[in-house]
Image 1 (cartoon, rainbow, N blue to C red):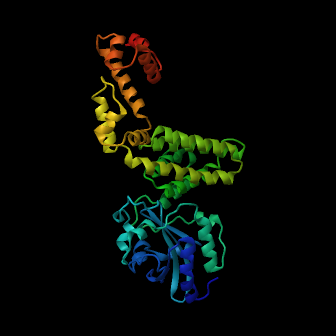
Image 2: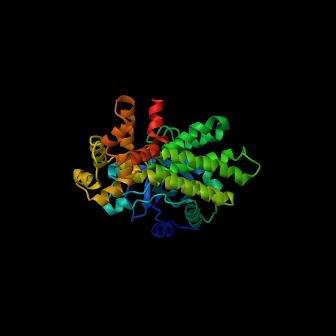
Image 3: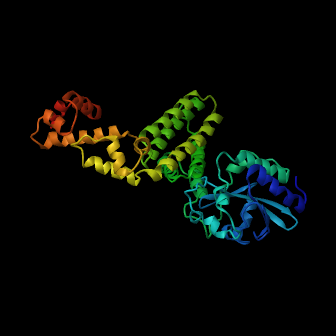
Length: 399
């Protein structure tokens, strides 16, 4: 237990070194008295601006505040002129070299100079932070808290001037207050939206609350089996969600299969709860990896070239020259971005063209195979059936 202000000031650099936790010591009116000097210097009134009513902090052992893409942990600990302690900010996503400081409103309130290295090392929630928060709280106060104390504190004042309209606190409150049959769809959509926008922290918080409430209405008499049913359903939702924002189908379903196997092998509810967070993080990583490279310019150029040359043999080397890329690298990246090999994509487009010609031209099947540069009628038949589950002649009869 820390008993003097000087002890506390000496302790906060050690906490930052060991846990990467920035700490701010605040006065009764929320002005900054001292802080982790290895971290950023903020405007003195920053916390007074984001917490309009500090008394709300005293209502909980630890009060969690969400703002934009970061979150803070506050607790009441009077010591000399110190009234409150803030741990944070923590960011919901790891900063990458592709990010820009302008995307982080927090940095608008930093008055110290900082380097690119400082920016890319902003602390983020890469794991369950609850044990570390509890540990630091106990070091400082000498008191222990349980996970339930943290789960009950997602609240913030109604009139926060920097607050977004639909806060996490409001959403969790709604989950707790709304009948089961009413909230399932709407909150599943919110979780999907968080995953698609790469906000794994908010998705995990809502999903944990949702699963805990649903535990009150068991799908079977076996609690673990019930949990497994719900988690498999959630994995299915995540899979569709990430595919819809550009993650290759093969990548999404591979991750889905991995988690379904893990779920089947898991024996305890505690392990299943951990899997909620792990799965959301992994699906969000897929979104982060593929969402912004869904259609790079060279992919569009390749597709455009292919669509205009379906009546020719299109080689990998030819496409590589069009986009000025190494053939091997182009092949690898095309599949990574689209989920299909170049050959698969070309064949798919040729079959779509074949379907159009069968329906709208007088050409025979042999002539269509020749026009589209298939090596033989048997090859045309094989590829056509691969994409349509029927032969060219069966398709022609239906047309």
